[in-house]
Length: 628
Image 1 (spheres, rainbow, N blue to C red):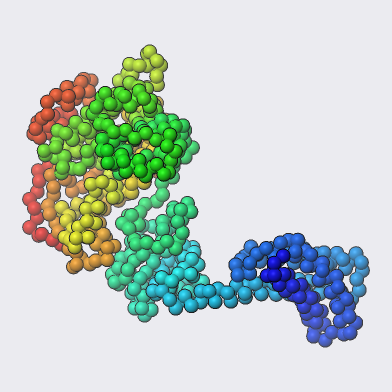
Image 2 (cartoon, rainbow, N blue to C red):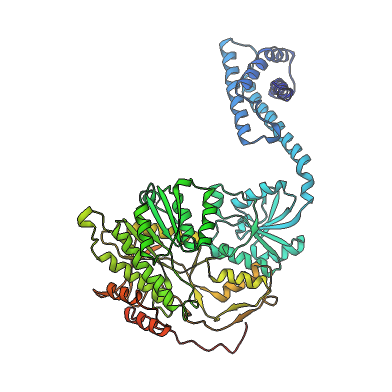
């Protein structure tokens, strides 16, 4: 036993003696006769050793007083109760005289107060010595939210030199006037400007990770309007996973305001679909493809084959994965989905069971005019050749990543993706020629259709960030334009879930539509990003530039002739698409896209033949008002 443990042991032995005598003294109303005084003193000769042995055997001297906790208090109480029972047993067995029953009850209560209180007092003293000076250091900050996250945040910020919490705000009126870790709950979130001015706080921390996106947005807007810098704690899912600490405060991101409920995945089903199987992801260097690869890798496939025509994109994903996953589990393939010979080599070499097809040209204006033919070849012919390769080599399932722009398309990109959907359905309805020979299972084809994802390559978010960094203006094509948004991880998770559900159907060819929530006005998105960047609209203005080629005001998730049916997953529905290719449609598409390169007009005319709902957009002139 070291000298610190020895001191604690002697402290507790002394406490046992003093509380035993104090119990006698209190029992007789502070007037202790000589008879009972002598009895109390004689009993100390066996009470103190007995209880000291119990305390030692139960390990009360392994802890450190400075870090005394609730668990230490529980251990002390248990040791005192056990030793008190032994004392009572000795008194009864040996008929020890002049030991009142009230003393046997009062002494352990007093002992628990002394032993627990002394340890708590020492911890408070040491923390004051170590951290007390910090209370006057750091920038004053208000915390928005007074729930569990706020309590944990206050504890972790005790040692912070950077922040000094001066108050909490919460819309729950029952908490107003209360104290959390010595910090007062001052009032409602709407009062942040008043309290910030009074307490000279320039920063607020959103400690509301489990609140709704609308509640977080409201809190951020109120704080921003008061001229305060808004920070936040990590997302609730990250806290639960243990990846981050709540004190890892960061700036509020757009995802925090547009955030959605965490996706509930069928882990057991996905393990059945992915674990110990060969999975192919095309376009694996892009935003969606890379996230799909990340999440698939967590299910421990036998091999994950990532195919992309961009060497640089493949290099980036290879560098990321090399440190996280076993080397033998990954294959990085440079290839074009339009190249039948390359696809055949990949399928022969790896024999993938499940194919996720995320490779596509998706930038609407860029694909609308000079690149229209190439967009159709990549998105349609590439899908056709990949789908046929998957079927020819007996893949179990083929999942096409589609888009809401395929619904009533007004641009080449959307029309090409709609035609790709139809191609998958048509290929799925044909007979696999290998079935008769090798009894290979018929490939099931599944399409997943969703809207924009936050921060994906070519999306509006990186563009807005770049424009804000340059001081503006932030360009929005129309004041009323809206889009559906979800995060990249959520989109990838729902693609996996849809792939699992599609694999459980007998026929296949389903088009799954993701629940995208409510559409977001792009101009509001721009305002949020400007505010999150610490600027006002006077400092970084928003300019309306007019709709671009092929751009729609409103995106749709269903066509006019489509209805949906529910699935077991609340965020997935199945669209019952009516339009189908004619019986010789695949041969017509193959003849068209394997032929000479066509100009824009011819390409759009041919698209119209296969996708009757495609209406090339007549652009509106640029609005007269240049900015808002």
